Image 1 (cartoon, rainbow, N blue to C red):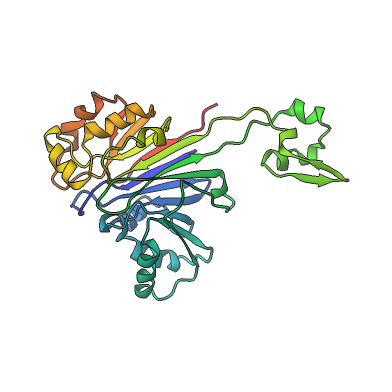
Image 2: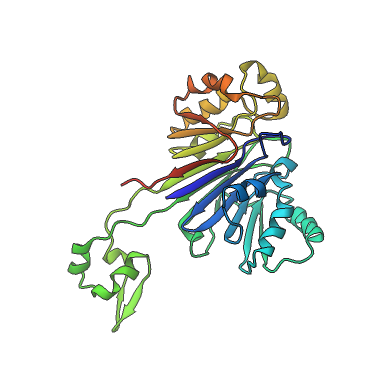
Length: 305
């Protein structure tokens, strides 16, 4: 199970009822953030998310409504007695920005591993994150911006008959099932000796601050959850969307339809969009399974048999 909290659903500037862009992901007890706008820490505290076990922060771009919350967050993580490395991924310029943050946060008891402008795929080798395939996509905004797709892999089901047929000692079954290869008494045992057919994992895609691109539907294809900006709800605001390199509800829904996703979660609402619910039909008429984000909305994604 992957547990999610939409920590902030606002764009541009915080408002009394909306903090800025951030999505919290809890997978097997470890934590991932996508973006870190103002208010991230407050929402995390309100939902008891925990700070110490954040292993990865993915930044879409370096505008303040997606990045400015990181200064205080890194300090708070340091105060939680964390000593393990923390990885931050972002577009060109992320290294310079993090170095500037280090001037303001003089001491951190952990190392920051900064990955700038990653290629289309990103492999992280920590015990939990190694099971997540992270893909990136260049988007179209007023500054360099990255879309992220996270695929949570699932090991094949254990096949008892196969293990017996391959004469695998029962004491090794659990380790082989977890993906380890083992040599015992001069014999090498591999996971494929006890595992059955592959099983489908869970895909989460996150696209914000961009115009619709032809590359997006393929990138988000078959996502269980597609988190997408909906800066403007009214179709009449299309000229603003084009000018500011953002999207309307209808445009986001069309991407969801073309990408054959299960669920669309709209977020990153303009401060002028007081009641997103007034415009939900502009999205749901195009893509039925659309839900509106709100601060601290909780969702869970489950593996399917």
